[in-house]
Length: 121
Figure (cartoon, rainbow, N blue to C red):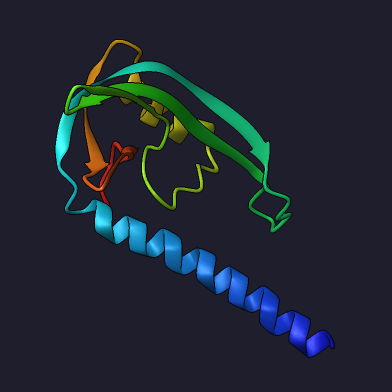
């Protein structure tokens, strides 16, 4: 029973990793439209790792708007598979590029324009 549960859990983890990796790769060919940053902040969290490097993470969260074929969308994803920064100064440097009001390129999935990123790959 335990081995079946372990296989199931590993399968779910592998499926999640595969999904993120495939979306990350697909985003490399997505078309771009112009968008605008509407909000940006740093969120501090504890990743629970206690690995000697510290377990604090500093993640930049953004909100942006963009339009595809006359339809307006709001996105929040900067890139796929980003886990934040261990140093606040690095998060602050990233945040500086996303000041509210700034015009940015937004890459969107042509099959589902509601799926978007600011950084491909």
